[in-house]
Amino acid sequence: MDAGEEIRRASIQLAKEDMHFSAAHFTIFSANRRENLHGHNFFVEACAGGPIDANGLCFDYTLLKDRLRSLCDSLDETLLIAAQSPHLRIQEESDEVVVAFADETLRFAHRDVTLLPIRNVTVEELAHWFTAALTGDDGFASLPVETLTLRLSSGPGQWAETKWSADAGCTAGGTGR
Image (cartoon, rainbow, N blue to C red):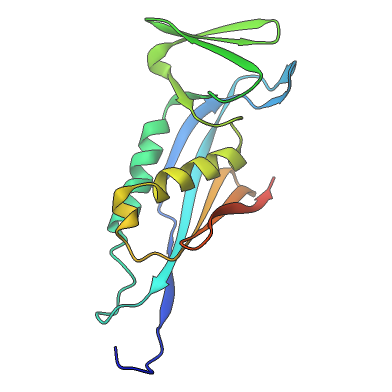
C-alpha cells in the first residue's frame, strides 16, 4: 500500500443455514425457580470486520464458518447445563450426570449432557460462550479480524448479541426477547 493511501475496511456477514443447533435446557430464575426442561432450534450469525488486503479480501472466512459450524455441532442434540450456576450442584458419575436444584434431583445419561462454563443457559450467556470460544481459537487469532459481532437466536425475533474488538475484547451487546 502506498503512503497516504486510505486503508479500506469491510465486514463479512455469516448467516448460513447450517450454523444452528438443537438443544434442550432450562433457564434458572432464582435459587428455587426454574423453567421446565424444553428445547430450541438455536441459530448463530457472525459479522467480522477488518482491513481489505491488496488482493481484495478481508480474510479467508472459511475458517470462521468452519469453527462456527464445529461449535454448533458440539452442542447439537444435547442437554445444555450451566456448570457455573450458583444454584446447581452437579455430580458426574460413570454413566450419568446428577443435577441438584433446590429440592429436585435430575438424572441424565452422561452422553446426552453438555456442561458449559456459563452461569445460566440463556441466549445472552450462549452468545458470550460462542464469542469466547471463537476469539480464543488460534486459527481466529491468525486472521486480521478487528471486530466481531455475534448473534445467537433461540427463535424468531429472540436474539442476544455480543461485540468483540481486537482492542477491547468482548463487551455486552443488546438482547431481544
